[in-house]
Length: 64
Image (cartoon, rainbow, N blue to C red; front, side):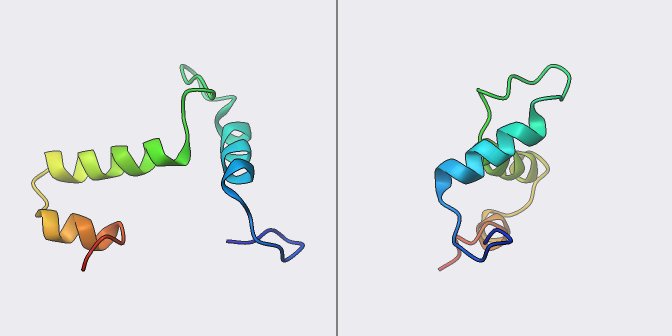
């Protein structure tokens, strides 16, 4: 992932951009959410709906 200037984004810039995007969402405290929470929620929803662990791992880039 890189910005328009072509330089690589660092984690702090990604978090800042993410917070700016969600700051206007009703009922969401943007200081409590990071992109990692989205990943965790995605995995939890897949697991709760019965998707096999191997498939979840593949989808989130953790497959061996």
